[in-house]
Length: 103
Image 1: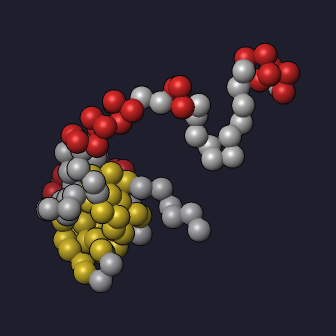
Image 2 (image 1 turned 90 degrees about the vertical axis):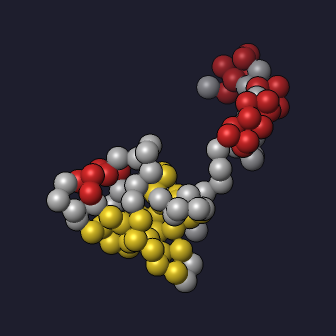
C-alpha cells in the first residue's frame, strides 16, 4: 500500500485534511452564505401524534427545554430519543440528526 501511495503522490496528513489543491473554497463560501448555522440540542422525548408526521419532539438546549417540530429535510424515522440533533436558531425545529459526541 505504501508503494501505491508513493507512486500516486498521496501523503497521509496528521490533521485528516486533504491536499490544499483539492479544496473548493468558492463552494465552501457559498454554502456558508446559503445555509444558516445550527445549534446542537438533545432530543429528550418524542411526543407521539395521531400520525408520524404529527409527532412533536422535546429538545434540551443548555438549560432550556422546547417542544418543536421537524424541519423539511429530516424524516421522523431519523430521530430517536436521547439523540443529538442540529436545530434552527430561530424556530428551534430539528434540521439534522447528529452523531454521538466523541470525547
